[in-house]
Amino acid sequence: MERLVAVWLADLEVERVDGSSLREFSSFLDALGELCPFVDPLRRGLCLFPMRAPRRFYGTEEAVLERLYEIVERCGLPSPRVGVAQGVFSAEAAARRDRVVMLGEEDLFRYSLPIEELAPKDVAATLRRLGISSVGRFAELSERRVAERFSALVVELHRVARGEQSEAPGQRDASVLRALGRETRDTRGVDEQLGFFGHRGAREQRALAAAWRVRSRLGEAGVLVASLRAGRAPEDRDVLVPFDAPEPRRSPEAPWPGRLGSPTPVRTPRQPLPVSLTDSTATPVTVGVRGFLSGDPVRLDLGRGSWREVTWYAGPWPSVEEWWGVPRRRAHLQVVTDRAEAYLLRAEGERWWIAGVYD
Image 1 (tube, helix red, strand yellow):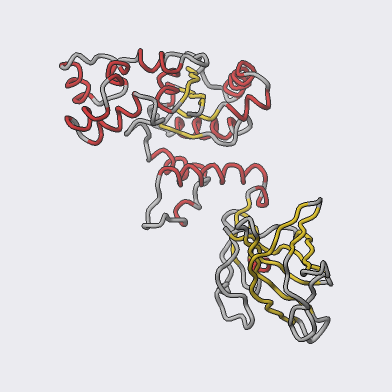
Image 2 (cartoon, rainbow, N blue to C red):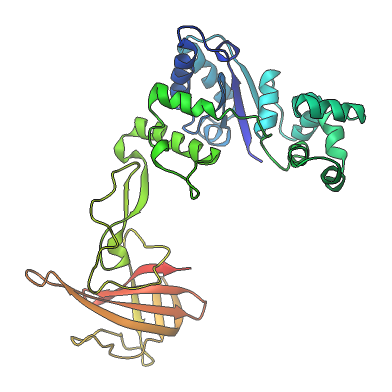
């Protein structure tokens, strides 16, 4: 479970009449992005970020916290309560106590918390009547007994108590991202990118908000995402575009005579990798002017002394493009090796290249 830093600004939990609390919280999140770009607002006045990356940069956790307090002071905010612990639930609990939980003491800290800190009032009251007053006592119950006697919510809380789940149900206020998006417009892309079933989950919202925050600092080319464009070969279609770039007007699925069919490689290298293909007599395999191979490929040399035996192949599929000017002649070949690896090779410029890798 990841070690997190939780920052609790109690003065910003309740919105003021003039709406300044949200604005100050939004400005603080932007400033905190200098320390770590993956700042996650949990509720108004409460946010967290992973300790690992900043600690690598600054050297120690103490140095990270010093930098954090400098940012708070620069923003003109009162001193916050800061907690460091494993998981979202423990990190928030540590922040409310202004405590850094030492490595190796995370379980002891979580077990020592009162049950009311984990469970809703009605569930906590029931557990109290059963003699369960702490998170640790709750964690001692077997998962089977909890599932037999309680609802799915309590089962999920039990996983948090045992340290098997980072975040407790209801710990996150989903409206915070929407409010911050209206304030800063950092999450304007969230409304346009829906999940598989037409809705956005909390993870999607957090990822999109983080992407917008990084993009606002590094510029349009600071965050790139994979996209498909029109073309005949996989290496033509796979491209990295700026995050939230407009969709191309022409569909990538438009008719392209001679386009390679399925399956499509899972990975296409940004720079083609040169390889050698030889037959049983160690003679290089080439593609003739009529589109036929000069021999059956039996060995694929990947360079630096690494090679594979070719156990199956299909193709080639030759193509000639831009015939009206300087024509581009190339051919594609699918091969499977003795190590159950599948490659898409491209013959061009009198040599072979890896154009894609199948999984």
